[in-house]
Length: 304
Ligand code: SF4
Image 1 (cartoon, helix red, strand yellow):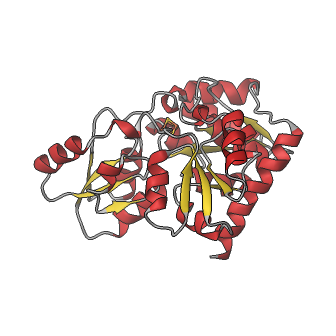
Image 2 (cartoon, rainbow, N blue to C red):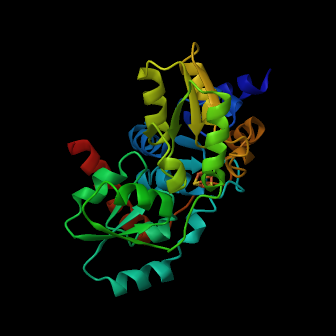
C-alpha cells in the first residue's frame, strides 16, 4: 500500500478531513480534501461534519480550527509548524498598546495566537483585512502583527492604523526585495506581477495585483496574461500550475520558502491520523473570546 493509500484509508476509517494551506508541500496539497488560504480554511473548518480535522498548516491555523470546532479533534501533523510572525505579538504588549489607545478598536490578523485573539474586537485575513478594518466603528484601529499588511490596509481605509507590535513581519515574505522583482521582470518581460500584502511596501508598489493566496489564484485564472511573477511563499506555484496548466509561473525570489510550513510531510500526516496524538487544545475562556472575534469576521464578510 502506498503512503497516499494509507492516508486515504485512515481518513475514511476515522471520518477525518484534511485541510491544507496553499503553502504546503505539493504531495500534502494533493492528498487534502480542501486546499486554501487562511480564510477559506477557517470557513471549511467551521462547516465540516468530520470527527477529526487534520490541519496541514501552522499553529495559529490549527488553533483557529480548534476554536471554531470545540467538539472535534483537530490534529497538527507537525508540532514544529510554528509561525514566527504569530510569535511576535505577545498579550502584554497588546494590552499595553490598547491601554494607551482606549478609543481604538483592535483588529488582529489571523496570524496570531489564540491568547492574543482573545483581546481582539475582530480578526481578519489578508483577503478581508480592508473590509474588516473599514467595518470597525472607531476612527483609529490597532492592527497587528504585520506592518506590511498594515501598510496595505492603511492605504485603502480612512482610519488611523496603530501597529502592534511596531515592527512585526513575516520573515519569508520580507525576503522579497524590489531588486528581486526587477531581476525577475528582466528575465520575464511579458509576465504580470502578483504579490501578497505581507510583502514589503516597495514590492507592493511594483505589483499589478496584490491579494491573498486565494486572490492570487483567482486573479491568475481570470487574467488574459500567460505569464506571472509570483510574490508569496513558493508552495503556491504547485497549485497555480495545477489550476492553469497553459500558463507559466515564476517565483519573484527563489528563497521565499516558509521553513515551518514545510515541516508537514505526508509521513507525518499518516502518523498523526494513525495515533491521533498532538490534538490542539485551546483553554475554554480564551477559546470563547477568540471565537467571538473570529465569528465577527465571518459575519462581516458574509454580509458583504
Ligand atoms: S509564510 Fe510567514 S506568515 Fe505564513 S506561516 Fe510562514 S512565517 Fe508565518
